[in-house]
Amino acid sequence: MSAPAEVAELLDPATLTEIVETVFVGLFGEERGIVAPGDSAPAALPAVAHVDVHGEWDGRIEVSSSDGLVRLAAATLFDKPFEYVTDADLSDVLGELANVVGGNVKSVMPGPSVMGLPEVTLDDPNQDGQPPGAVGIDLSWSHEPIRITISAQPAGTPSQGEPS
Image 1 (cartoon, rainbow, N blue to C red):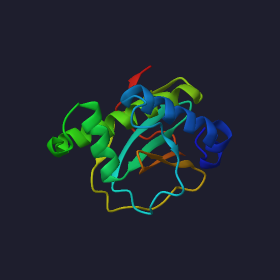
Image 2: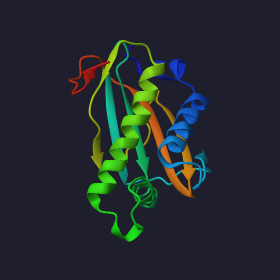
Image 3: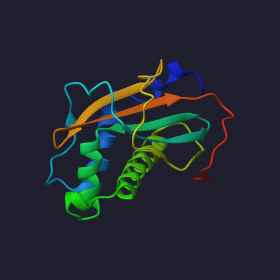
């Protein structure tokens, strides 16, 4: 299934929100607060990571966040003081978020499929908005915005993933 309009038929925003809440509690615990619906994420969220899925369903799972969210997530996950978080830590934690959210999304989409490795950009100048037919949610964690977008992609795009 590769038509963008089909994403909404396969995954609704409530299920995606539940997936993200579960991932955040699993990775970061409940002490900083569970992901809660945000009012509306800012237009530009510069920290972006995505994973591509190929198989019976071809799509992209993208995680976009504020610099503050990814710094707080890195400090929490790596148990470091905020001021000692490096760009490598930021890339690692954002890639891990895309990977874990992506794996959970992949599990509810038609399969079999493979998932590629995360691709991370900490300062993405290309903020084109949500693709047509995509399912997206704007959330917040510790008062920092995060956006998760699931979009279909044309079949046949090369993948770096391993079969699952």
